[in-house]
Length: 261
Image (cartoon, rainbow, N blue to C red; front, side):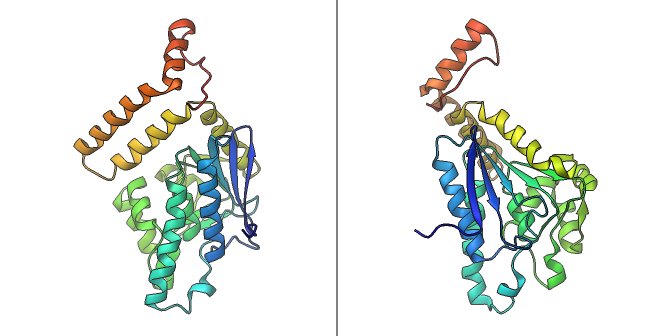
Protein backbone atom coordinates (compact mmCIF):
# COMPACT_ATOMS: atom_id res chain seq x y z
CA UNK A 1 0.00 0.00 0.00
CA UNK A 2 1.29 3.47 -0.87
CA UNK A 3 2.49 5.48 2.13
CA UNK A 4 0.33 8.52 2.92
CA UNK A 5 1.63 11.81 1.57
CA UNK A 6 -0.45 14.41 3.40
CA UNK A 7 -1.73 12.75 6.60
CA UNK A 8 0.14 10.95 9.36
CA UNK A 9 -0.86 9.18 12.56
CA UNK A 10 1.63 9.64 15.39
CA UNK A 11 1.08 7.92 18.75
CA UNK A 12 2.48 9.03 22.10
CA UNK A 13 1.33 7.96 25.57
CA UNK A 14 -2.07 6.78 24.40
CA UNK A 15 -2.81 9.81 22.22
CA UNK A 16 -2.88 9.48 18.45
CA UNK A 17 -2.38 12.69 16.48
CA UNK A 18 -3.91 12.71 13.00
CA UNK A 19 -1.78 15.41 11.37
CA UNK A 20 -2.78 17.11 8.10
CA UNK A 21 0.14 18.50 6.12
CA UNK A 22 -0.78 19.50 2.58
CA UNK A 23 0.90 22.81 1.63
CA UNK A 24 -0.03 25.54 1.82
CA UNK A 25 -3.42 25.56 3.56
CA UNK A 26 -4.36 21.87 3.95
CA UNK A 27 -6.95 22.22 1.17
CA UNK A 28 -9.04 19.05 1.20
CA UNK A 29 -8.82 17.13 -2.06
CA UNK A 30 -9.65 13.48 -2.72
CA UNK A 31 -6.23 12.19 -1.71
CA UNK A 32 -6.16 14.08 1.57
CA UNK A 33 -9.62 13.05 2.72
CA UNK A 34 -8.95 9.41 1.84
CA UNK A 35 -5.75 9.57 3.87
CA UNK A 36 -7.71 11.08 6.76
CA UNK A 37 -10.12 8.15 6.51
CA UNK A 38 -7.29 5.62 6.58
CA UNK A 39 -5.70 7.31 9.60
CA UNK A 40 -9.03 7.38 11.45
CA UNK A 41 -9.69 3.70 10.76
CA UNK A 42 -6.19 2.81 11.94
CA UNK A 43 -6.57 4.90 15.10
CA UNK A 44 -9.87 3.21 15.82
CA UNK A 45 -8.33 -0.25 15.62
CA UNK A 46 -5.10 0.37 17.55
CA UNK A 47 -5.15 -0.56 21.22
CA UNK A 48 -2.32 1.89 21.96
CA UNK A 49 -4.52 4.80 20.76
CA UNK A 50 -7.03 5.70 23.45
CA UNK A 51 -7.81 9.28 22.37
CA UNK A 52 -7.21 11.26 19.17
CA UNK A 53 -6.18 14.81 18.28
CA UNK A 54 -6.92 16.25 14.83
CA UNK A 55 -4.27 18.83 13.95
CA UNK A 56 -3.33 20.82 10.87
CA UNK A 57 -0.12 22.34 12.19
CA UNK A 58 0.84 25.68 13.69
CA UNK A 59 -0.42 27.86 10.80
CA UNK A 60 -3.74 26.43 9.68
CA UNK A 61 -6.18 23.63 10.46
CA UNK A 62 -7.72 23.33 6.99
CA UNK A 63 -8.83 26.24 4.85
CA UNK A 64 -11.51 24.22 3.07
CA UNK A 65 -12.05 21.98 0.09
CA UNK A 66 -9.82 22.24 -2.96
CA UNK A 67 -12.02 24.55 -5.03
CA UNK A 68 -9.86 24.21 -8.12
CA UNK A 69 -10.35 20.44 -8.06
CA UNK A 70 -14.11 20.79 -7.54
CA UNK A 71 -14.87 23.63 -9.94
CA UNK A 72 -14.96 21.51 -13.11
CA UNK A 73 -17.18 18.76 -11.72
CA UNK A 74 -20.79 18.33 -12.81
CA UNK A 75 -23.66 16.98 -10.74
CA UNK A 76 -22.96 13.32 -11.50
CA UNK A 77 -19.29 13.61 -10.63
CA UNK A 78 -20.05 15.58 -7.48
CA UNK A 79 -22.46 12.92 -6.22
CA UNK A 80 -19.61 10.41 -6.21
CA UNK A 81 -17.04 12.90 -4.88
CA UNK A 82 -19.36 14.07 -2.10
CA UNK A 83 -20.24 10.54 -1.08
CA UNK A 84 -16.59 9.62 -0.62
CA UNK A 85 -15.82 12.83 1.26
CA UNK A 86 -18.75 12.19 3.60
CA UNK A 87 -17.55 8.61 4.14
CA UNK A 88 -14.11 9.90 5.11
CA UNK A 89 -15.47 12.42 7.58
CA UNK A 90 -17.90 9.85 8.98
CA UNK A 91 -14.93 7.59 9.74
CA UNK A 92 -13.60 10.37 11.97
CA UNK A 93 -16.98 11.05 13.60
CA UNK A 94 -17.46 7.35 14.37
CA UNK A 95 -14.08 6.83 15.99
CA UNK A 96 -14.94 4.90 19.18
CA UNK A 97 -12.57 7.11 21.14
CA UNK A 98 -12.57 10.74 22.31
CA UNK A 99 -11.48 13.11 19.53
CA UNK A 100 -10.28 16.71 19.97
CA UNK A 101 -9.75 19.10 17.04
CA UNK A 102 -6.82 21.48 17.62
CA UNK A 103 -7.67 24.52 15.48
CA UNK A 104 -5.07 27.07 14.46
CA UNK A 105 -5.49 29.65 11.71
CA UNK A 106 -8.44 28.90 9.45
CA UNK A 107 -10.94 26.05 9.68
CA UNK A 108 -13.35 26.93 6.87
CA UNK A 109 -15.83 25.00 4.78
CA UNK A 110 -14.70 21.41 4.60
CA UNK A 111 -12.03 22.22 7.17
CA UNK A 112 -14.60 23.16 9.78
CA UNK A 113 -16.80 20.25 8.72
CA UNK A 114 -13.86 18.00 9.60
CA UNK A 115 -13.50 19.75 12.96
CA UNK A 116 -17.23 19.17 13.56
CA UNK A 117 -16.51 15.43 13.45
CA UNK A 118 -14.51 15.77 16.67
CA UNK A 119 -16.06 15.58 20.13
CA UNK A 120 -14.37 18.81 21.23
CA UNK A 121 -12.73 21.79 19.53
CA UNK A 122 -9.82 23.83 20.95
CA UNK A 123 -9.21 27.12 19.09
CA UNK A 124 -6.28 29.46 19.06
CA UNK A 125 -6.99 33.10 19.87
CA UNK A 126 -6.45 34.25 16.28
CA UNK A 127 -8.19 31.26 14.63
CA UNK A 128 -11.29 31.73 12.50
CA UNK A 129 -13.99 29.24 11.55
CA UNK A 130 -16.96 29.29 9.21
CA UNK A 131 -18.99 27.74 6.42
CA UNK A 132 -18.46 30.11 3.48
CA UNK A 133 -19.83 27.79 0.77
CA UNK A 134 -22.83 30.07 0.12
CA UNK A 135 -20.40 32.63 -1.30
CA UNK A 136 -19.57 30.10 -4.03
CA UNK A 137 -23.20 29.46 -4.89
CA UNK A 138 -23.37 26.12 -3.05
CA UNK A 139 -24.00 24.82 0.47
CA UNK A 140 -21.88 22.75 2.88
CA UNK A 141 -21.77 19.23 1.52
CA UNK A 142 -19.79 17.17 4.07
CA UNK A 143 -21.93 17.46 7.18
CA UNK A 144 -22.02 21.21 7.76
CA UNK A 145 -25.78 21.65 7.59
CA UNK A 146 -26.34 18.62 9.81
CA UNK A 147 -23.55 18.50 12.40
CA UNK A 148 -23.49 22.27 12.84
CA UNK A 149 -27.25 22.47 13.48
CA UNK A 150 -27.00 19.62 15.99
CA UNK A 151 -24.12 21.38 17.74
CA UNK A 152 -25.46 24.93 18.08
CA UNK A 153 -29.10 24.73 16.99
CA UNK A 154 -30.77 25.62 13.69
CA UNK A 155 -30.85 29.43 14.05
CA UNK A 156 -27.12 29.82 14.71
CA UNK A 157 -26.32 27.27 12.00
CA UNK A 158 -28.46 29.19 9.49
CA UNK A 159 -26.76 32.45 10.44
CA UNK A 160 -23.35 31.00 9.63
CA UNK A 161 -24.42 29.09 6.53
CA UNK A 162 -26.69 31.78 5.02
CA UNK A 163 -24.04 34.51 5.43
CA UNK A 164 -20.87 32.50 4.98
CA UNK A 165 -19.18 34.77 7.49
CA UNK A 166 -15.99 33.96 9.38
CA UNK A 167 -16.20 33.73 13.16
CA UNK A 168 -13.35 34.63 15.50
CA UNK A 169 -12.33 32.57 18.49
CA UNK A 170 -14.17 34.42 21.24
CA UNK A 171 -17.46 34.52 19.33
CA UNK A 172 -16.97 30.85 18.42
CA UNK A 173 -16.64 30.02 22.11
CA UNK A 174 -19.75 32.03 22.96
CA UNK A 175 -21.77 30.36 20.20
CA UNK A 176 -20.63 26.85 21.10
CA UNK A 177 -18.57 26.40 17.94
CA UNK A 178 -15.48 25.91 20.14
CA UNK A 179 -15.07 24.39 23.59
CA UNK A 180 -11.89 26.22 24.60
CA UNK A 181 -9.86 29.20 23.39
CA UNK A 182 -6.17 29.42 24.25
CA UNK A 183 -3.16 31.36 22.93
CA UNK A 184 -2.20 30.18 19.44
CA UNK A 185 1.03 28.58 20.58
CA UNK A 186 -0.80 26.48 23.20
CA UNK A 187 -3.48 24.95 20.98
CA UNK A 188 -1.85 21.60 20.28
CA UNK A 189 -0.50 21.12 23.82
CA UNK A 190 -3.93 21.93 25.27
CA UNK A 191 -5.65 19.43 22.97
CA UNK A 192 -3.10 16.73 23.83
CA UNK A 193 -3.54 17.39 27.55
CA UNK A 194 -7.30 16.97 27.15
CA UNK A 195 -6.78 13.78 25.18
CA UNK A 196 -4.43 12.34 27.82
CA UNK A 197 -7.08 12.76 30.49
CA UNK A 198 -9.50 10.74 28.39
CA UNK A 199 -6.80 8.21 27.50
CA UNK A 200 -6.49 7.33 31.19
CA UNK A 201 -10.17 6.39 31.34
CA UNK A 202 -11.90 3.09 30.56
CA UNK A 203 -11.84 2.69 26.75
CA UNK A 204 -14.88 0.45 26.46
CA UNK A 205 -17.04 2.68 28.64
CA UNK A 206 -15.90 5.80 26.79
CA UNK A 207 -16.75 4.17 23.47
CA UNK A 208 -20.17 3.16 24.80
CA UNK A 209 -20.85 6.65 26.17
CA UNK A 210 -19.90 8.27 22.85
CA UNK A 211 -22.09 5.87 20.89
CA UNK A 212 -25.05 6.36 23.23
CA UNK A 213 -24.89 10.14 22.94
CA UNK A 214 -24.21 10.36 19.21
CA UNK A 215 -26.70 7.71 18.10
CA UNK A 216 -29.23 8.77 20.69
CA UNK A 217 -29.36 12.28 19.24
CA UNK A 218 -30.31 10.84 15.86
CA UNK A 219 -33.49 9.19 17.14
CA UNK A 220 -36.32 9.77 19.57
CA UNK A 221 -35.91 9.68 23.35
CA UNK A 222 -37.34 6.18 23.79
CA UNK A 223 -34.92 4.73 21.24
CA UNK A 224 -32.02 6.54 22.87
CA UNK A 225 -32.95 5.29 26.33
CA UNK A 226 -33.17 1.72 25.04
CA UNK A 227 -29.71 2.03 23.48
CA UNK A 228 -28.30 3.48 26.69
CA UNK A 229 -29.71 0.59 28.76
CA UNK A 230 -28.30 -1.97 26.35
CA UNK A 231 -24.81 -0.47 26.33
CA UNK A 232 -24.87 0.01 30.12
CA UNK A 233 -25.66 -3.67 30.67
CA UNK A 234 -23.03 -4.86 28.17
CA UNK A 235 -20.27 -3.17 30.16
CA UNK A 236 -20.94 -5.54 33.06
CA UNK A 237 -19.25 -8.25 30.99
CA UNK A 238 -15.94 -6.32 30.94
CA UNK A 239 -12.86 -6.51 33.14
CA UNK A 240 -12.83 -2.71 33.32
CA UNK A 241 -16.21 -2.71 35.09
CA UNK A 242 -14.96 -5.21 37.65
CA UNK A 243 -11.73 -3.23 38.11
CA UNK A 244 -13.51 0.10 38.41
CA UNK A 245 -16.07 -1.02 40.94
CA UNK A 246 -13.56 -3.00 43.01
CA UNK A 247 -11.22 -0.01 43.07
CA UNK A 248 -14.06 2.27 44.13
CA UNK A 249 -15.03 0.00 47.03
CA UNK A 250 -11.44 -0.51 48.20
CA UNK A 251 -9.77 2.83 47.44
CA UNK A 252 -12.46 5.38 46.62
CA UNK A 253 -13.29 7.03 43.28
CA UNK A 254 -10.84 7.92 40.50
CA UNK A 255 -8.03 5.50 41.36
CA UNK A 256 -8.66 2.60 38.96
CA UNK A 257 -6.30 1.69 36.13
CA UNK A 258 -8.19 0.38 33.10
CA UNK A 259 -6.93 -2.07 30.48
CA UNK A 260 -9.69 -1.83 27.87
CA UNK A 261 -10.81 -5.42 28.34
